[in-house]
Image (cartoon, rainbow, N blue to C red; front, side, top):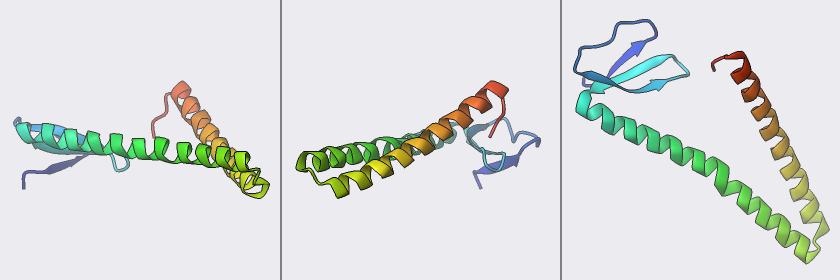
Length: 110
């Protein structure tokens, strides 16, 4: 096995292993031999960036376009439903931002 997983507080593997990424939900580190760990780390980072891009940009612009189209067509029923959904989404987004800001101020980790 090239992949080594260490739990929080365990000793690091041999000197030729480098940290590829951390599993923050289980407090584990994933280690690979040094040239391979950079490749794994870059794929892990690209996956993280791609998921963030899909979550933030894909849906909000679609909803904005639908609201504008509904308002242009004077379709009140559809535009009201979309406005309510958009307000709920922004409420939860603001609530999440408040929680994150509070954790940053008190220096709490996830």
